[in-house]
Length: 265
Length: 303
Image (cartoon, rainbow over all chains, first blue to last red; front, side, top):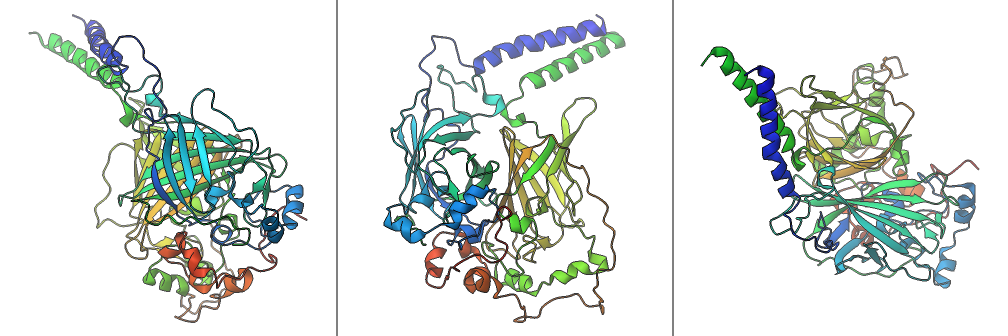
């Protein structure tokens, strides 16, 4: 037996052993069932109560900043004109006290999030500050609301690790096991015009909000949630505004404290 | 059995082992490409990352009493001492500074597996090496340097890097400290052309709770430099008498600066873990006094 022959035989043997294993990992034979629901296929658990951890942009998030304080925001000149005219009392009087609590800004506010499954294809995210509700709808044709709202319409999908795409790990019986890692991607449109910051920094009704939700376990046992938010708005932003917001998971909801929207505080 | 036949069979077994290893690689070895030039997107903390924070602004930092005392003793004039000008910032400066980064990897020349990720370099920092080959961290008694020692593992598509053995430094560029006993954990989260870093600093000496800081980068066709320009110390106008510039307890002149400029109460300015959470707002609701108009460091486009 030559050396080359031995190597070829070795590789062939490995492939012969490994191929069925790979096939087994993709699930065992039988007719394909319906695709798993978003809830069943969730690669990460976002449900529960999460609290904002405000370690960045503190004086723009924990308090309502002064008029004209636009640090960090890539505003167009038109946006500056709008923000310079900010009048919180007028917003309150017009019933627009929730303008800073829309989808593009709500996760920057100090808040608690309560995340749960409304149904198998809809993830619900509630905030105690401003008592807002966002619905992340999975699936090919999610229903859309007719009129624009503060939270708009959010389509959602799971982003899976490269190794889990195209079938993922399988279990006997054909039910695919959810992968252990992944992210939630959500795209939100159909918004009412609102504020990126409570001091009137605007986004238009044509803004698109793209978000990525990642879970980050910590050394001390805490579990963090990192939300990367991309706000695109050609009218009021010179470039997409991209920020991260962090939340920490809490046991139970004892600190859940619903408070109404406020234009001034 | 002839000796050559034995050798041949051993080669075949080795090929079998390599092939089986490749084919059975699962999620533990999952990874995404991180190489490239990444531009910073400083749409948060732009002042802190750029011109620098106010001298006393510790809001949102989980400092304990010792950490706060050390922070208040800090004078930025220390950086003008000849011997401190090129001291380099700590590893967390990757998120505290304004710069983009360049990432590449070093591969094993035979197997092609990634031995280390390299992140370099931004100004005021040396390149960081994230060892991926399973080597252990040095012993507790090993010397510390500015960059520390970093190892990494993959959790799905997230690279998780752990840094130890770095010297005492700052978690905000106004002297808010980290000790040399701190541990830094960095998670690299890639989504398309965006790369987010979540950095966690655990410090048993100066922090009551872990401190978190994040930064977003965007893949860029403009090349980022793999190494910053050399630091050359020079006279910066500080005539030192041999002492390190500092403030004694109760003598920091900047304690009320943020209160005067932005109406933020002193107990927020001085930080502490409670300042990170929403319920702190109730504590300062009556003492916060929003100015009519921003007067300094207000950002926005030129007007």
